[in-house]
Amino acid sequence: MIKNSKGFTQTDIMVAVVAIIFFTTLIVALMTNVKVQSTKLKGKLLANIYLTEALENVGILQYDDVTEENKNLIFPKMTDVFTPQLSISKLTDEDNTKDEDVIKKVEVKITYQIGNKTYEETAQRLKVKE
Image (cartoon, rainbow, N blue to C red; front, side, top):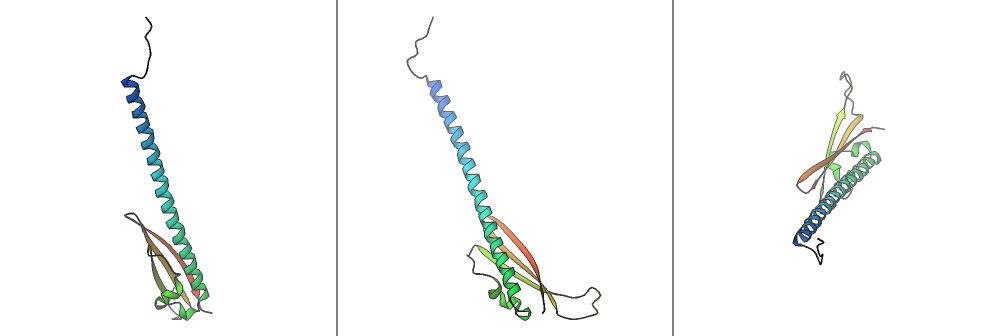
């Protein structure tokens, strides 16, 4: 005997709805992941731009002006998301026979937060007295 097919059964409709829900959930999850990754990359990119600018400013400043008190001369204007930190230490020779102040090690650290996770970018540069 041949069945007469005049429409969709309830099972056909349920299978179609489940398939649509599954693929919609998958697409939303992928889009969310792409958005999170692009936000992380944008934060890292901006932090590295700020680091590069700060290190270039260290190179431009005179040796005696490279101090933690002159932090505002070293760091560029940043958005509130980024928190800059500066650490400057004097390097001496290994056997400590000379106590000359001719080389400074400048460490620049920028901390930023995306969502509830904190990220950090760090760079260092030597500044030599001319």
